[in-house]
Image 1 (spheres, rainbow, N blue to C red):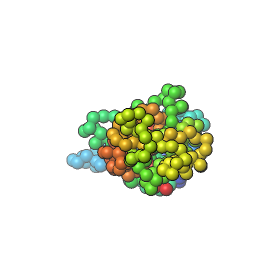
Image 2: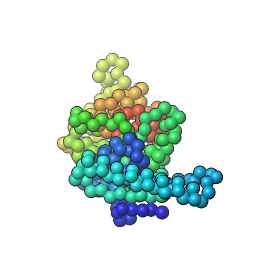
Image 3: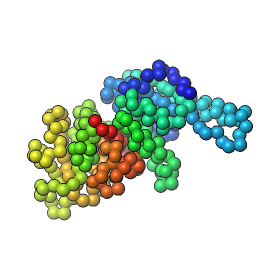
Image 4: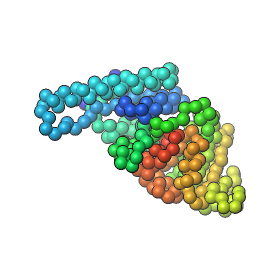
Amino acid sequence: MTDSTSAPDAADQSVLVAVDGSQPSTHAVAWAAAEAVLHHRNLHIVTSYGYHPLSGLDAVLATREGELLRSAAEHTLARAERAARRTRPEVRVSTQLTFELIVPMLIDRSTRAAMIVVGSRRYGPVRRTLFGSVSTEVSRRAHCPVAIVSEGVPTDPAAANRPVLAGVDDLDTGAATLDIAFDEAARRKVGVVVLKSGQDSNPPEFPGATVRRHRPGGDDDPTAEWRARYPHVPVEALVVVEDSVSALLDRARQAQLLVIGSHGLTGFAGLHDAAATAELSRQVDCPVIVAHGR
């Protein structure tokens, strides 16, 4: 059962953001509204009141429980819409209240949405397991890019001048990541930092360096195609030769957005799958976009 305040196809090619009334989802709505305006797309806000009735409840109590959850979801949706319009008054907003379970619903909508945005909580390991399942499952199984926005996302003006960071292994798995990273950087009028795992023949910049620079235009330049397509976007291409995860986290602290692939980064120890990718989003302040194949 789906109750929409908009047409059923309102999510098509929109920036779709899922909300649950929490502080992280409020941050996600604000970021998604700005993203929708940046890409000249509509913003579609969805919340679910789907649930499994508690065992032992009779029909009357089960119905009452559903009514309470629906009422709370309606308030959540209204607050989210107000938050989006406060952030970007010009954004075109549609909303949707559904009884469908949120993860399968988002995965289904991902075949038509331009991007899905979800919030991410910062908690200890046990609570991450409970609250991290939506971002993990959606980022793994979606068919469109998925943005994971933490509650610590910076909002100060200086953050808007930071570069977009792209973490890639190679061009076979990283093309979609670089497509998104360069497009986002061009729209934001900032540079791109490409962090690639592996070895590099260039000498280190200083003794003991773990990060080395690619010389632009060289045969091994992983960004040549994108430099040609986005000539006005400044590019810094780096290769990580050891301690790659620490280098990625360090660079993410200096970025306004991190873009990585949906299958993780095999060259970055511990970032081999979607679960690790979602976990990474809870260790950085900037939003993380999980790219899917071209």
